[in-house]
Each structure stands twice: as structure tokens, then as C-alpha cells.
Length: 145
Image (cartoon, rainbow, N blue to C red; front, top):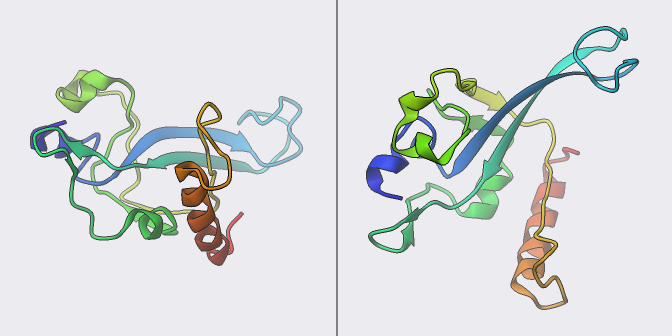
């Protein structure tokens, strides 16, 4: 990834990706969470993924104002003009997907999903386990599910 790719509307000079949204019903739906019918309360689920983008020229992560763990635990996310990541081509040609959903300029995080690589070593002392052991207490402090 180059500096130009890092400044595109998909990455938008931030170390997270926006994957889009899904409209759901929060309960009482006959159609297992669909947005229509069932009498549930409608809600919109936005999915963002925190990451570290690497400058291919320098082999270093692009600058971030906060360390990864602190950034990943933020309950307020802002990135004006950021669009959903749909395909790799968007990084250099963001206009190739004009229909991509757009992240609201400001978003309040109501919940976190922690994903781990099940194919990687997760034994005591592994890098992945050490990272999760540092991240989980910080997520708990947010008092968000």
C-alpha cells in the first residue's frame, strides 16, 4: 500500500476498514433478524475492523495518533467521507464502486466483536494470546457488550 492508497476514500488516512451495514430487527422478528416484518425494533449494524496499514515503501505502519489497543477500544469513531471496503481495486480506484455504503461521519460504538485466527497458535505465551490478554481488559473497561 502506498501513501496514495492510504489517503483513498476507502482507507481515508485511518487504520480501520468500514465493511458496511446491515439493517436488522432487535427482537420479535419472524424472519430471523430481517429488517422487515415481525414487529421487532429496527436497528442498523455498522461493522468496522481496526487494523494497521503498512507502507510498502518503508515496511512500517502508517501513522496513527493512538496505539492500536487504545484505538480499538474507542467508543466514538469518526472518518469523514469513508466508504465501505468491497474490493481490493477500490484502494487505488475508489470511484470504481460509487455504490459503496458510506460510514456516517461520526459513529458511536455500542458493542465489540473480538475475532481471533483459529488456524494460528493460541497457546499460553503465543503472540496472539498475549495480544488478546492485553486487549480484553481494555474492552471490558468500555462497559460495552
